[in-house]
Image (tube, rainbow, N blue to C red; front, side, top):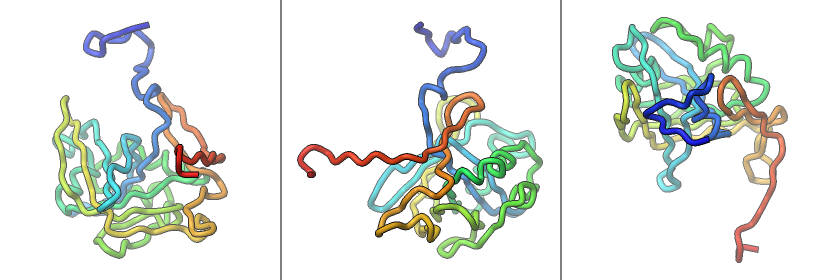
Amino acid sequence: MFYRPSEGHGLPHNPFNAIVAPRPIGWIATRGSSGDNLAPYSFFNAVAYTPPQVMFASTSAKADRDDTKDSMANIRETGVFAVSIVSGDMLAAMNATSAAVAAGVDEFALAGVERADCVSIDCPRVAGAPATLECRLVQIVPLLGVANFLAIGEVTGVHIAPDCLHEGRFALPPSGLMARLGYQDYAVIREVISLPRPGEG
């Protein structure tokens, strides 16, 4: 099969995000004048080491947020956000925070997620997450299409759960790490394969 996205795929569901998978899930926490917000984004990844930077993309809009969603609107307002990593035992709560609710609805409370304060920025974070990256906004990049925006943040603080540190390395939490596939599908990462690059021994 071959198709041009501009002409449609003719399938029951768009295969694009199922092809580019698995993807890490950035559980983005923000704080704005309307309150705290928590939402998952699978167009998320690390993009640089020094200084460490991450990005995530918001790809739709809400009627009460004009051209974007609550997360991006809060980041525009405050210039900060926190990205928590999702463990297997947090899947249901993460999914609950993906609900389309009105601006000002607190998804931490809605999904029963315990929050904690960040250290280097004024923002909440998921208290029980395997790891959280505190970020200061570097830039927001408009992408092609309607309501498509990419936020790039510099990591200014890192939280790691004690059970995810083994012999000085970040390790999988006991319940595994969640990854996003396509459609309504997810994967749980429970196995690690170490493979040195050629010449590194």
